[in-house]
Image (cartoon, rainbow over all chains, first blue to last red; front, side):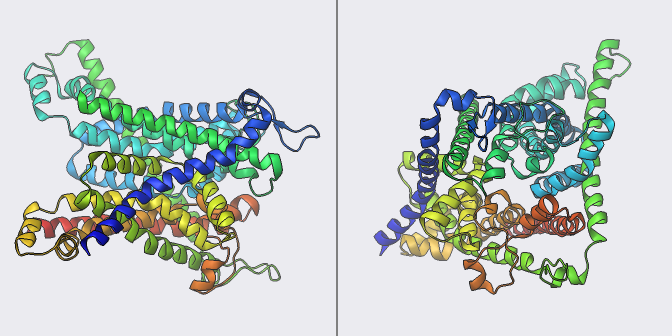
Length: 282
Length: 287
């Protein structure tokens, strides 16, 4: 009896590994044929995407660059806001404020991405159109702003945990040397928590890179090379927007895009693990 | 601290940093408040009993979201029923049975990898594997199975955390009374880690409720009214997918906002429940 139970639990434990293998194998099997047919270089660095042209073109450089710029932009806006909010909440905020804002941040994390997309579509896009006087507000900028809000919760929560874990003695030592509380938090606590804050940023990269629906609703979805006020398509939205009607080589190329996205995410996971390992040793 | 004793440069730094913190806090709070009130006000005005209790009909131009509400409930139920045994079992293996550190490392790494994969990739693999390879077609069941893979790491992690916090003396006491390992787990360890399992369920609930990209190609867009078992085998849109379709493809922003307001209220409720449940179990544990 005990042996059977042990076997069952071993099986359940290994299911997770099986799922990861399943996803990896499926993406590789589905994604390789198109890359093989089109050539890796042409596929990754081709500047034009037009699967329905008379001579179909399958270059995904616009998607890769849009994803990279979009993620970088979202972090450029989101990290400072998230970081300073986290320092305030972890170190300065009165308990009541901390509890209330903490609840607000977890709400931000729980709001479905389509709701962000909807508000972005009806508030942000028209606002960008009228403020910057461009023909269509659905643009890379709109996607960046929406993503910057969506990465806030993970940046705030993870940084806060890291800041709170810094030993009190470090701060006491700094305070007793005559540094003010603010100087202590910014120059002692923050550097001591830097690997945790780095983790927060990397998690934010993962979230921004992987978001599909909200981006799809605000970015206009045209396969242009990225430009702030131009309609763009990310790697995620490239997969999502054409999947329902594609076939043949076109469909296979979409799987290849998913494979590229998957590799990006795996790279980020590796970075995350590297930071975590470093922290344990350090 | 003597404020007057500080040099002008130090004082400027102090003011700058303090200002940055208040500004960042202000932006975060303003964003949350704006999102809550904007969605609730715009959506609340569009929620009517007819919307909640009917099915869409092209003939009369009526839009109802009852099928979408039911589909969401079905998919939540199906996902949790399948993911709970898997996730709890995996957590039990990791904390109670596994002796080989390498195996534990590999499983935990796999779980971490799973939780980092974007939902659109889950949707794609779910479509290839469940809908096409297993021949389920586009159905709620295929969507639920896809969500099972997505939520497995969540259930695993929360269960594992609370299993770890069960005092070793409980197990030793039970072993000392002559109970076998499985019996100890079933009667002593699991009941004392209910809190982790419930927390995991609530977190997963929120995630399932908000998921859309993974369901687009696995569960589909249909708005047909079905019972639970018929519903599982046929295609159906959940609330989030319906929101997307109404807003992006049909330009029905009123309906989209009504759904958004419902989702927002549910998210608030789920967060509140999570906090209350956490507090309740913490109190119980402290006694």
